[in-house]
Length: 395
Image (cartoon, rainbow, N blue to C red; front, side, top):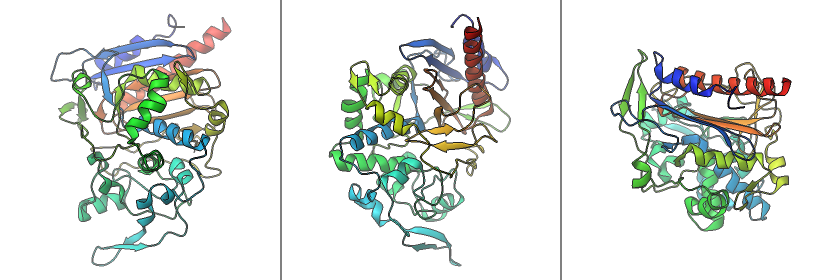
């Protein structure tokens, strides 16, 4: 497989092209082990340290599936009812109102929601929450009313109004951060402690944390801003190293190698190298489309420095599971219908193909999201992998 799967050329290509990415780490795994590991470029453009497969990244929204896994564990143990009001476990969520716009004085027009938010709504991104970089309403609240950004890792950043009544539609936002609050409310522990004991230890994950330490900082890939002319500017960017809230939607730092262990758990029906994380029947249930006829749409880039307009596989039907995007149809890369995947804001991307038993992860540190160079490189990696798989089957 690795002989015909020419991934090194793809990685070398994206760091040498114009425009380019500064550095990239990519891995592909089967159910047992990584079958490809590669790194190219440098950690930071204003330094000379070469990118390595052991480097650490702010993994942003690729955190979400790990939080979703912690939720599913509590469902298995009958400690969490997905259909009960989430305020049962995280009381503050019950204080939030629906925003219907702004009055003539620029004040938010608020009302009570028609129904309570459930943890199911949160897992499916149907609770009504958004992000300021994808929502004009939230961006206005940030600009005019001082609504804190989620990167502050503060409780105040979660106390936002809902944009619609829970269950009405899909919109991507702070739902999984609230799932983390639900997990903490049930367990009485910080989310990082829950992850460590219940997910990281069974999977043998060693370098994943909400609280950046000196060891990870010493091998941290630097953040870069893509300028309008295509050039890149290194940024001084770190999430809080002593966060008020462990943000289940985006707060983890980690290595790609450790994330592959998480992907393998999903490929192996919930089993890790040091113990079981989820029951097989939970994995089979969770991977299904739970949105019904609602669909995942395009993410509009409201803050250009943070995100471009973004959509996976435009024109193809996409749903949501617990808690991944599901491509309802076969993707042009070769990813089969029903596969799982998602991304992180700094242009990190992954997929999990349980049908064939493969998954992959592509990590860069570039803003805004949906960077043409990084995303195209990832799509080329996935496409090349499935082409090699097809060729191997035909041989």
